[in-house]
Every structure is written in structure tokens, then in C-alpha cells.
Length: 527
Ligand code: ME8
Image (cartoon, rainbow, N blue to C red; front, side):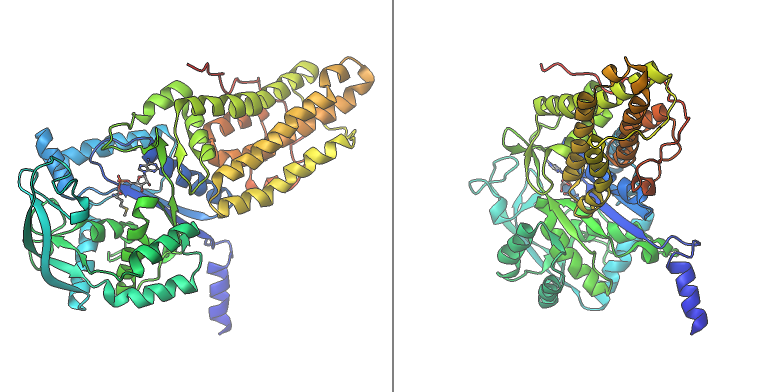
């Protein structure tokens, strides 16, 4: 007894040998039917900021993203392009990885549903669910468009015709396997009741209950025979696994579930949060939990459904063709301006308009006028008046107190905002403190203190306080705008950049010499 509890404490509760705090965060796996647009960047940047923040806090983080590569749509796109589906998706995945690199996305794994481990994991899941009676063979009835070779449901039709080509559709049926969702409905409802934070924001939970659970769940079609770009069902080879069972399983196949090495699964599952767009919340809070219940696996702790970036009132999307290549924004404004904009502009959970004008205004107001100005003024004055040598003779005045206490209060505020996934609000709080620091410069008038030798010690303290605010806020900013944060640390020349070193004011080392000021952001002219 003594021994086992000792082992438990040593290995799992921070004996230093193994990290005890884990955090698993995922984005949806996107369809590589076309190159990604700023909407995909939105989810991926938000998850990246949260993952980076958790790493700063000392969590052992696993950040997963990837691509959902099977299905009829991709098969058709590939045919139209005259290449095999695999060649088609390979090209888009290479482009996506390059995009994530240019946005500094720090994912731990990029899963592709064409990965061998994923395929074998899904095949085993399908077989197990079939063997235990949760999947059964039936008949799939749908409306078929012959020229498009596509099945549609009644609600997808436009004026009773194929939504793709506008031609007539015919009722047809095909043999298919189904997952018994209805069997698990009651357990799912109980799970929602017992875990009030499972679906966020709350409005999405009410929508799920009213629109899907109350009318009663229909069993889900999980295999198809009318196309073959999918994972073959091992015991009935004319069938391929139909999208959502394949796609959702990525969250556990990526961790080695059902493979020879499931150590990551043991370490990181259940996920702390699946972050998804609002249109796919229902798959994540109904189908996914039911698959997991059937497999006897714990459910993820949270599914967060965020709103959409919209242009002229409509969702930015591949099919609407209004998704500009995000690299154009990165090239014009810089990676951190794009990251900052998507993190700060839209309250997480709501829809928000994406306009280049608001990106420019946000960059000028916050990054140029506030952060850039503060860092540049402070470092330049330290260089000019004291050759960049940092000292603090502690000639304090009451005006310092508000700045110092606001800066120290940030720790709790920012941590709890990130825990609530309110990254925009976390940034807002940080930038409020930066604004106070700029005002502190205006109020303490260092250029006047500099004129009188007897005020030089006060001037040293003023500059020290400013540098210390910059040091502390930059520790947080590493999660959101990592390139800029490293440029600031380079100028500060400090070693005290750990997360825990935000809770004490005065840790900037005395007698270090600041490096030359570096311009952080250019003002952008409104077109
Ligand atoms: O749905 N605003 O893939 P998908 C905000 N493969 N986010 C947006 C957005 C916008 N305008 N447009 C896209 C799929 N997104 C499935 C997912 S998961 C097991 C399978 C983001 O390529 C948002 O996260 O259509 C949305 O949920 C996702 O991209 C949809 O990507």
C-alpha cells in the first residue's frame, strides 16, 4: 500500500520524473477539397494560442490538427483535375502544412485520414461495433443525381432539384451499414445533465437538445457502396466507411488507440477540448460521444463550437469562392498582425465580420500605437539616457502603484480567460496594461526628468518599471504573437522569461544591457 501510493505520487503527482499536467486540444480535421482559407486559420490560430499558453504554464500539451481526406466530394474533385484522389489530397496537404508553418502553428501531430494507422484503427472500431451489435446492415434511401453521381436528402435539394447542377434527382436505395444512435440517446441526455460544461457556449447545447435530441435520434449511415474513396470495411469489401465515423475517430487514432503503442492515448485521452465551428458541433456532441460510449471510452471534457468569420454577411468558405489565400494577408501585414487580428477581433463563440479594413485598424491601434510604441519608446529612452544599462534605485512614487498592481493582476485574469477559451478577452486585458504603461510615460515625462541630474534616479526607476511591464506582458504574448515576443525579449536581453516569473514585479535583472531597439510593426495606410 505504502509502496504503490509512493509510486503514484512520484510518477503522477509531480515527483519531477513525469509531467503530471497534460492538456489535449484539437481542431477539426479539414477537408482538403481545396486550399484552406482564413476561416480554417481562425480555428487553428486560436487552438495554437491556447496550446502555447498551456505549454507556458507547464502543461504537457498535445495539439492535434489534420485533414479529413475521404469521400465522394474529394474523389470527384480529383477526377475533374485528372489525378488520383491520393495525388489530389497530397498536394493540398503540402500546401496546408506550408500555410501552418507560415502562421507559426505549433501542432504536435498532423493527422491524415489516409494514414495507415488511422485506417487500421477505424477498421477495428467498425468491426468491434458490428460484432457487438451497434452497427447493423440496412438500406440507405436517398435522392440521387445521376450526372453528379451524388446522393442528397430532401432538405438539401434546391427547389426539388440537385443543389450542385440543378437537374432532376431520383429516389434510389443502396445497401448500407448503420450505427444505432437511438440505443444511446438516454445515456447521452444523462451525460449532458451530469456535465453541464460539456458543450459550450450554452446556446449551442440548447440548440442540440431542442433540434436533435427532442425529436429523437435516427440511426446513422456509416458505410457506402456508391463510391470507393474511403476506408474499406474489412468484412464486406464493397463498402467503404462513410465520413463521420472515419473523421471523428481521428481524435483517438492520432494517439495510437487500437495500435501496438497506445501510450499517448493513455496519457492524453480524454481530450480537454475539441474546438470546432458551430456547423459541426452536432457531430461532436451526438455522434462522437455515442461512438465513444459504444467503445467504452471516456468522453472528451468539452466541445466548444465557435462562430464564423463572415464576409458581407456570408460565411467565408471554399464553395463560395470568397476565401482568399491567407498568405496574401501574411505577406501584406505580417504573421503576427494576422494572428492578433483573428484572436482579438471576434468574441469567441460569436460570428464576426472579416474585413481587411478592420485588420488594418486593429493592427494600427493595438500593435503599432500601443505595443510597438511602448517598446520602442522605452528601449530608445533607456539607450539614450543610460546607454541601455538597467538599474532600479527604487525611487518610487504613488503613480507607480496602479501600473504595478494592474500588471501583477494580469496573471490570474489571463489564466482564467484562457481557461474559458476567451483568448480575445485575455489579449484585451494585456493590452489595457500596455495602454496604462504608455500613459505612465506621458504622466511621468521621462524627457523632463532627463534634463535634471538630480532626477536621474527617479528616471531610472520609471524606465525600470516600464521595462518590467514589457517583460511580464511579453511572457504572455509569447502564446499569441510569438515572433514579436521573441523580438522583444531579444531587445530586453533578459533571462527571466518563464511563466512563473510573471507573478513578481522586479525580476528584470539589474545591470543587464539592453540591445538596440528594433522596429516591431509598420503603420499600415488604409487603402
Ligand atoms: O467540416 N469561420 O471540414 P471543413 C470560422 N472535415 N471557421 C471556419 C470557417 C469560417 N468562415 N470556415 C471553416 C469539416 N472554418 C470536417 C470536419 S472533424 C472530425 C471533421 C473552420 O474543411 C471551422 O473550424 O469544412 C469549421 O468547423 C471547419 O473549418 C470546417 O472545415
